[in-house]
Image (tube, rainbow, N blue to C red; front, side):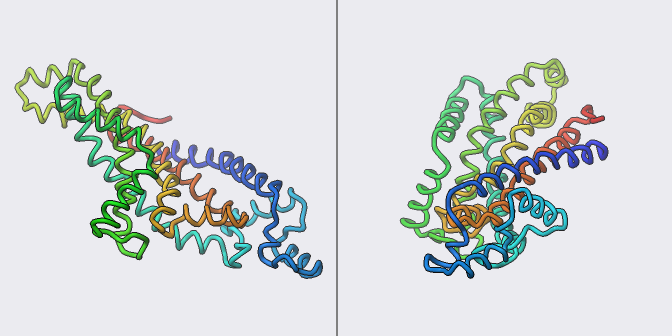
Length: 306
């Protein structure tokens, strides 16, 4: 397993290099000039060139890109053009908020999806099944940002149970966490149901029942453990999406997370911040998939990686 993890971490390098090249190219060749936003429209040519030189924007594309890669290898993500602060410092300030929202949404997803999916599979073609799957279908159809605005209107504006905008407390994370968790639970619950239906047909489940074991023991101890393997695949992919997909919610709820930081940087063409944020989010997606592979072996000891 250790050998496999090291191999996967090494394979991250070309993926991250490709991502940085694409993002760097987009901002380099896109219209607009970040120097003009710093200096203003009436800046003299001398001042303009001095600002360009300060941030290395007067260098050719290849030189700028290689310099960026060298800085990343040294643990430096560059300096924000607009705020004149280290990008890594800015990300460290914002990343914990995004992680808290994402992990809360992830926990809510599991808390809802697994019981709902199992109940729908065990009670196949009953009112419980139809209710769970109808709710799942509605959850898939509703966009996350729309659900976030609905929760904000009802529970923050009307009922005043939660703050309307980010206030630095845990309460500010609850509504965006539920918005992420509910939409992801809808997809995951259908996957759990489908996987459970397949597992419940297996011979070892019938054998467990013939031994007189309680139905709860058969379902949750024997069937669910094997049914979770394809679900882990989905959740590994969704975990990365959750961390990166809270951008719209951070804007709606005025939460200072990494998604909000990246959007503000894109609008102001502060490409060192965008590049650093994308690097962090891409790494989180890859690490989430590696974590899913590790969970495979924990759930099913028969799975081994060479």
